[in-house]
Length: 222
Length: 307
Image (tube, rainbow over all chains, first blue to last red; front, side, top):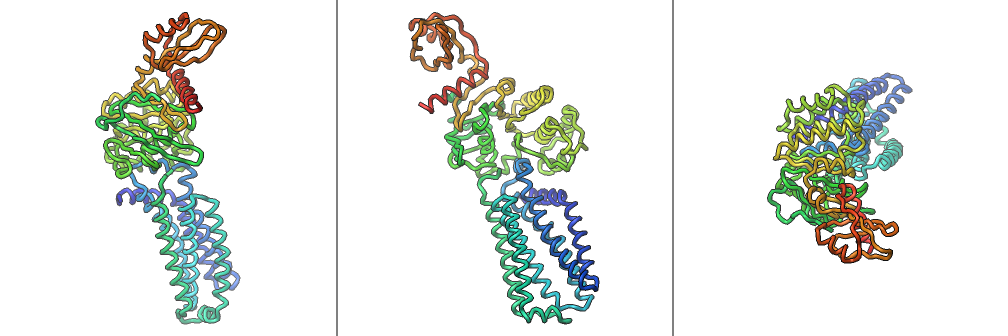
């Protein structure tokens, strides 16, 4: 493993994605701003936009940074450089994850702070579960992209994840304990919610391992 | 199959593939034995879909062979791919640079990975190729794109250049500029070039040795001068129904009335004697161009595999 080469590849991709990164960060902040306005309609629209930005950023960054390397034929150029498939895989997966985590973490952090400022601390626990669901969905799309190298399959999984998100929200708010927590002024962590978050974290970890395993076991780079 | 270059010894070889095979759904590369001597230019000629690009990608470690052994510059590619690539410059017609970025950005990126990057030489190449560092890749013509990629490869002074169809689709001027630059590279006798094309003229111009490949198999491999020396076209008059004698490498190419045209891959005075003995009257013996030799080799190989 060549750490210097991985660093160069990481910085190269970070530079290439700078415009999108800024756009998603700005869109995320604007959505959070809207969600914080004390008007039920605007808050709802703002939250909807936060989820939309998280989904759009995920699929777009996977497409731009990972899948387009094959379709734009730049992968052949990169792989002709003195790097191994392991270096390429670590650099690529790290940068896709980092670029996604920047808007994701910014939105999550700002919403959490806003929830505290607005005195609705109970929402933080629910927000955490929703944000980790979004991250899990992103990880599933990342694994799909790595395994299939296909835009079509990745979009199919994204659509599936969006359907699952609606089902997840529906099921989540069907639990009285969680509804009560979300309306509370005090931050509490019901065991059911902790279990959900635990499963989400486990899924994220497994997906990360799977992405690396599948990517490094590919026999043919191009 | 005539593989006349010795591939049994690894000494003095810049690259070698020994008994390499690779199967895809609709294509198989079979038992490729192929080597390139250090300090030489080796041409790999084959029709489209013959397996040239797959062979080169296997040599670069981009495609893993199902069997066989691959080495470059004394290193086994399966275990030292990244190290070997420090000394190898690879170009493919299928390769693209990042469209939104400039040539200068690409130079900076490649320089950060190669301690051997020669800034002065890169500047010279920019000038010789008529490129501007600030030019964005998106706006480059095909010729400029090829030149920009060759600049990125040549400025790191690789010991082995693997060039997959570098002159494909270029106008004559751009082709001349690129071949001239490659000739300059060859002047340094420590550097080796493996050059593939389906255009025999380009390969003939700069190659010391040539390998023909067709349908995933090496069909002939020899030094360029040996090819040109040994292959002859013979025209002779013979009565209708005449059959060519069983001389090694002799093949009837065409027949019009009593004028027979034959090609011979192992020409020798004895061949003419045999033809005369068989009742033929020799009209002419001519040298063949590399293109004619290539076409004849391919047709012979296909006839052999179909029979």
